[in-house]
Every structure is written in structure tokens, then in C-alpha cells.
Amino acid sequence: MTNPTACLLIIGNEVLSGRTQDANLRYIATGLGKIGIRLREVRVIPDEREVIVATVNTVRAQYDHVFTTGGIGPTHDDITSECIAEAFGLPWEAHPEAWARMEAHYARQTPPGDFNKARQRMATMPRGATLIDNVISIAPGFTIGNVHVLAGVPRVCQAMFDALAPSLTGGPPIVSQTVHAHGLMEGRIAEGLAGIQNQYPLLDIGSYPYYRPGGGGVAVVAKGTDPDEVAAAARDVSVFMRAVGGMPVQGEPE
Amino acid sequence: MTNPTACLLIIGNEVLSGRTQDANLRYIATGLGKIGIRLREVRVIPDEREVIVATVNTVRAQYDHVFTTGGIGPTHDDITSECIAEAFGLPWEAHPEAWARMEAHYARQTPPGDFNKARQRMATMPRGATLIDNVISIAPGFTIGNVHVLAGVPRVCQAMFDALAPSLTGGPPIVSQTVHAHGLMEGRIAEGLAGIQNQYPLLDIGSYPYYRPGGGGVAVVAKGTDPDEVAAAARDVSVFMRAVGGMPVQGEPE
Image (cartoon, each protein chain N blue to C red):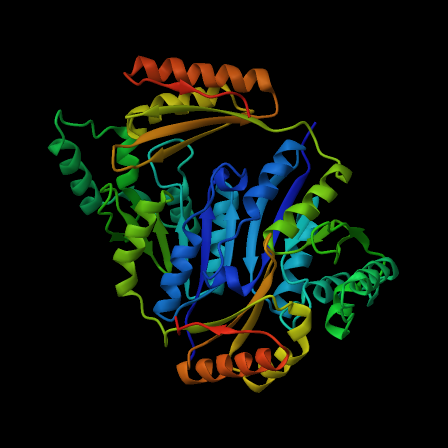
């Protein structure tokens, strides 16, 4: 059984300018791994109509799922929703259920908030969109086709992802196990590690060096959908590291 | 005068799986802004030959500069360098200067390190590559054509970027000024903000809401290459926010 694939589009000038540190990629990547969907690509693109429309159409044809973050607020630079409609060739119109939720939300406030034109844009969606609940700030995200449109603000994005994830059909969960060896240099283990990778062609064995003022080391990660194979590969890595003089510490399966 | 454009390719399964939080995007984006190069796109892609080669060829035709991070270490999953050679149709061969630096580095260690086959791969580059210095761990990055190949480990990546940046020809620096208004909701200011954006078509005015347990607010950022225009727009945003009952705090130009 193969795992469905996904692409994440982070839409926002603020990430491209370096003003904002993205905090959603890691959350979504980890969440997708747990339900057995492989995140295969991430793109960060600006808040520009032509770029968004073209990119959405490229990646939705290429992957089983596309997740977008950012650009669904009330201001002039929030154009994701209308661009998704354009990408699908669908009318962009009031979504009755989203409209009702937001109208009720502003009426409930004391004093009552103004469900003004800008806020009404957040209840305007491609025709046929399915809502994604937003327990933080009401205004929902939506799914149209294989594209899932989430907010950019991390708390809201993550709440939307949590609301959406149970409805997605994944494959076998992707598990990983890490072996750390402080003081062992990557260049010492590279050849042996390549040998272990060859013995486990279905696994993805990655090597991640680190440098700290107190001295560096390496973390080797074995990853795949068969927990027994992952555990066996992690053991082989530990044995090999010990053989070349390292003191490996093997982590739990994740 | 227009600003040169750039694309950043983050190459690494560890970022796509959520294991590793990227820490280079923001550093490179900010650094490029200072020298007037616009980061227009970021892609995160896996350590896979076909994907790397195809993506490099797509983006190097599209942008003035391409920066890659990750995949230039000694292990089997470090394939960026040979993929760049393949993308350019160049031989991948020992780089004499890189080779000499690394050989000397390992000879200097006590006891002398082994400049083994795996480490020799780090001195192997597309023919004609120009080295990018690495003051942290010696093994250099390189530039070939408009593609700049940097390490993935943040300290090393950032040191390489700092070594490279002074040699890049940019445009006028991109400056920004932020106006914060705690307690003001985005939906209240959206319409007025669109009006201000229309008055400054050369600037990029972005609105970024935040939600915190103690209550939310909004940060509005004016950005462009003309510092006087940026300051004027920030003043207009402050005046407008005060008019709708907010208490804006205007930041310094950055």
C-alpha cells in the first residue's frame, strides 16, 4: 500500500520577507506523517493573484492533497480564497453556513460587532466548498476538490488542521527512530551508513550532523511504514556506531 | 531600478517530515532584503535526484539567483552537489582548492583525521564552481552559474551566506515599518487599509493579526525601497487606526 502525497503552499509576503517565522510547516508535516500522508513538497509564495492561481493549479494536479496556509483574513492582501475559486474556474460567492456562523458570532459580541463588508469576504468561498471548523476565531477554512484552505495565524491554522485531519484518508503511519551519537563525526560513519541504507531499500535513512560550542555529533534517523524494519535498521546503526568507537543512544519509535 | 529576484530551495527530507524546524529561510530572506534582492519563492523538496535536478533547472531559469540549503555533507543522502552538476550538464569532479583546504584541515587535527572517500565527496563539485568559504567546518559551499549552494546546518549555512552576500549585486535595500495596534481587530480596519494601499501602489502594505490569551491585535507593515514613502504610509496607517479608536504604536524603519 502506498501513502497518499501532499504539498503545502504557504502563502504570504511576511514569510518571504523574513518578518515572520513560519510555524505551520512542522505542525502539518508531523500531523500528516501520523495519518500516513507524505508531505512531498512545500512552496512559499507571495500574495499575488497570478502566482497563487498558477501554483495551485500546478500542485493540485501533482499531489493527492494540497494544503494552503495564509491569506484568508479580511484585508486587501487576503486573496487566497478568491484565487482558489479562479484556479478551479468556480464562482466565488457567499457560503450560507459560513455566513450564518459569522453573522451569529458578531451579533453575540457585546457590544455587537459589525459584520461588515471586509468580514463578509471571509464567508465568501468557491461554490461547493466544504467548511473546516475554526474553534479559535470562528471564520472557517474550507476544502474544495483536493485543496484544503487554512488560516496563516498558527493557533488558527493548527486548530483547523486538527478539525480536518480525521476526515482525511491516509496510508500506514510513517514511524521513525533516531540514533544520536555525540562526538561522532558524520564523515566517519558515512560509508557504513550507506551500506545499511542499501540493506533497507524501503526505509529512508537520514544523517543529520550538528555543531555546538561543546562539540558536535550526529543524529541518524530511520523512517518508514514498517515499525519492525525501522527498529531493525536503528539497531544496525547503533551496532555500527559502537564498532567505530561511538557511544550511540537509541531513541524510542516516534 | 528594479530589484533582482531570488528563490530558495531547502533540500531535505528532515524538513518535509517535520523532524527539523528550518532556521535558514528567515536568515537568508532578511539578509537578501538588506542588499535589495527580493526573495520571491521558497521550495522545500526531498533528497531525491530527479526532483532536485528538475527543480533546480526550473527555478534557475526563472529567478536571478537560486540559493540551496542542505545535502552537501559526506553521507549517502547528501546528493545536492552532484545533482547541481547534472542540472547544469557539467562534470562532477574534485575541486583542487576545496580538496587542498580539506586535506590540510584533516592533517592538522590531533590525531590526524582521515580525509576518506566520504569526506572527499565534499570537495567534489561541478566543474568551474567558485567556492563559498565556510569558517565553521571548512568544507566549502559553491556558486555555479546563478546557483549558490549552501550547507543545511544553520550555523554553517549562515556563515556561508555571510561570506557570499557581499559579492552579490543587489538593488535598493528593501525597508519596512510596522504599526502595531493591540486590541484592534483586523476586520475593523480592512476597508481603510485597502484605501491606503491604493494611495501607495509601489509599496506592499500587509496586515498581520495575532491572537493571544490576553486578547489579540494587528500589525500592519509597509514595505518598499523608498524610505520616505514607507514612513509616510506608516504615518497614514497610524492616523487611520487612531481615527477608528485604536492606540497604534509605530515602529522604527527596519
